[in-house]
Image 1 (cartoon, rainbow, N blue to C red):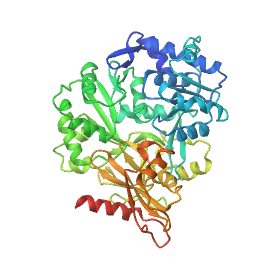
Image 2 (image 1 turned 90 degrees about the vertical axis):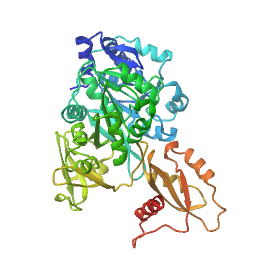
Image 3 (image 1 turned 120 degrees about the horizontal axis):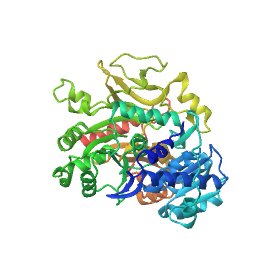
Image 4 (image 1 turned 90 degrees about the horizontal axis):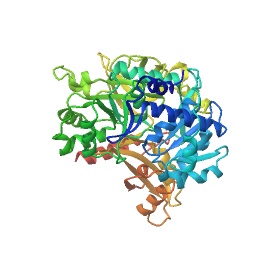
Length: 512
C-alpha cells in the first residue's frame, strides 16, 4: 500500500487532464505530475536515503510542495510537512526531532533553513526549489514505485503538546487512506474534473483534505497570490467547476462578509469544509445565507487526521428540523469508520447529556508519537485515543464540545499552546509568573492574552520588550495581543492557576 500509487494510476488513466494549477493556469497534467514524482523519488534515493527516512517540507503552498510530498512516498520515504509560519527555532526543533535527512524549502525560507544542514545531526541536504540542485533532482531517471506496508509511516504530523514541545503524530499509509475514504463516506463524493483549492496551509488541514481529491483525480489549485483574497477566490470558483476548499471559521466569516463574494456567481462552488476552531452560530447562519448549503464542518485532531465527527451539508440544510440550531452549535455526528465515546476520569462511558473526555478508536488513529513511547502509551491507553477535549453527546448522537482540557487557543485556525508562550515570557528577569489564555474574538476566533505578574523589585515591564522576547523565540501569530499586569494569579488550593477564572474575567468584560 503506497499512496503515491494514486499519482501513477492517474498518469496512465487520464494523462492529459490537469492535476495541479496555479490560479487558472495548469502547472502539470497527470502524466507530467507522475513523471516529476518518479524522477524526484529517484533523486531523493540517490542522495543516500533509504525507505523510512524522513523528508521535511518547509515552504508556502506551491506545486513543488505536492510534487515533493508524493515523491517522498513514491520512494518509500516519510514526509514531514512543517508549518512555514513557525519561528526558525521551532522549525529547527522539528527537523532535529524527526531526524529529517533532507529538507525541501522555497527561496522565501532558504536563508533560515539552509544553515541548519551544518547544525542538525543527520540533516545532509537542504534543497531550495528553483535552484540547480532542484533541477538536478528533476532530471533524475524515474524509479519504480516502492511498495509500503499499511502500517508504515507516511506523514509525521507535528502537533504541540501541553509542554510546548511539538510531538510528531505518526500517520501511516493506512491512516491516510482511511481518512480519504471517510471523506467520501461523510463529507462529499469526488469525481475527476472536480477541484480542491489550497488557500489554507498544505502542511495541515488543506493537505489532508487534498488527499481524497488526489485519490479521485481532481485538480489541486493553488492561489497565485499565495493568500486568501475574495476577488481571487471568486475568480477561481468561476473558473474551476466542482471546487471545494478547507477553511478556518475565521476565513469563512471573512469571505461571507465580503461584498465581492455576496454578489458573485458561486454556481461552481461545491463544498467549504470548515473546522479547526469553534464557529459562532450567528456567523454560521450568515455564511449559510451567502454560500447556501455548501458548508460541512469537521472535528478532528492531527492524531486522527481531522476525522472524528462531521456536521454534513445535509445537517446544515435542515432548517425545518426542530433541533436545527442545536445541531449547528455541535460538531456533528460520529464518522462512519470509527468509534467515539465520552468517558469519565476512569475511562468509563458516560450517557448522553453528561460531559467528559472524548476518546476515539479506529483505523484513522495514529500509530503513536514519534520517538515518544511514554506519551504514546498515555494518549492511547486502553486502545483509545484520549483527545483531551471535553464534550457531551445529545440523545440523537450529536457531539458538542464544552472545553479543551489542554487549554489550546485557536486563532485564525492556527493552534497556540499557552505553556509554549508562557515559557518564553518567563525568561524575562522581571516576570515572576504568567498565565496565557484565549479571548473570544469575532474576527480571529480567539486572541492571545497574557496575564503577567512582575517581580516586586523590577522596573516597570514594557509590553514592547515582552513582544520582542516572543518574536525572538516563537512564531509571530503566537505572541500575545494584550498584556495584563496583575498582582497575582488566581490559584486552587493545590497551587494550580485557575485559567477558567481568567477567561471568565475577559468574557465578563466583553459582555459589558
